[in-house]
Image 1 (cartoon, rainbow, N blue to C red):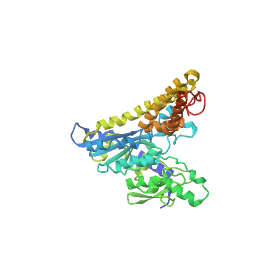
Image 2: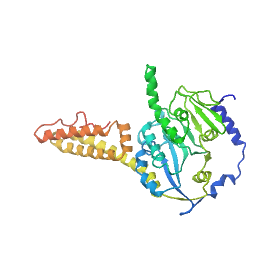
Image 3: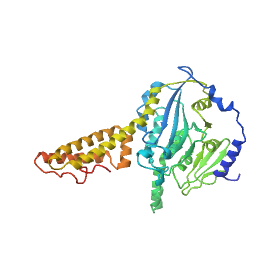
Image 4: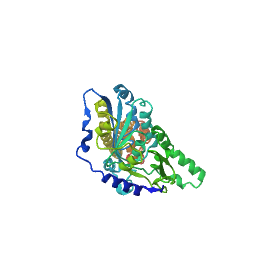
Length: 389
């Protein structure tokens, strides 16, 4: 069979779709699904909405494992909407898509992705799970593919991410290859959770590895070459971006849906009730809470810097103590919220370790002043007079 490019294949799928006229009855087929108080299948909703590694992070789900087990769902429905280049958080961080960060401004944390998947595929493996991709871009796409049972919204995409290929700058071929494999090993782990071909997930993270598929019955077998019947990635800086229609046609997803009821009906569920609603509510509240904490953290940084600038003359000790208090509060906040810690680190290049060093310096200054020394005074380097990044 002749090889098809993804563009030709997409055109064929669009023509086939337009040839099937839907009736009003077909558009409301999922209305037969009924939510009750306590009858039918017990469904737990896990919203994964927003930015990867802050809104969506493994610590959050790990802390809820026992509560999820107590809820005892018959089905865990993960609703994934994470398209980082459209996320309003870039405004809060002072970033925008015109500076080359369209798909990458949130970073790519392979360790966090694997740990998120581990929460659901190891301690919660006894519970049937399905992921509904409302839209995904970047590392959320790779995470979504770690579930075998996947549906997509009609207008959703599986956008790839461009994981840094700095290893390409290494001249020694053997060393470069080893580092590349080390950087990509997480995609193999995630693929194994879903029973998917490793080549499929790797293509969504590695810009230089091609991807093609060949049909075996109704299934598609993926390989990191261009020898298959359908070429989705030619390699060499090209990255796959698949529509919901294409993903369904090539068996990456189980089909297109427009609502939660569509997903449930596709899984053979007509009567259900929700369980663990407190868990769902807490997950929905998490992005709002940590963003407020992020603004508080920035204020602590600004106040600390200002107090350092005022630490002069007779007021040196007074304002050093105020600066010390702000940095101590900030350390506690960052230790409590890894989402805030990650974001402060990205925007201001400040870590808990940095703050602890500043705190130690301020304490030394206060000790010198207590013993009759003059201390360094405001306006110097380090934390005094310069807390911001």
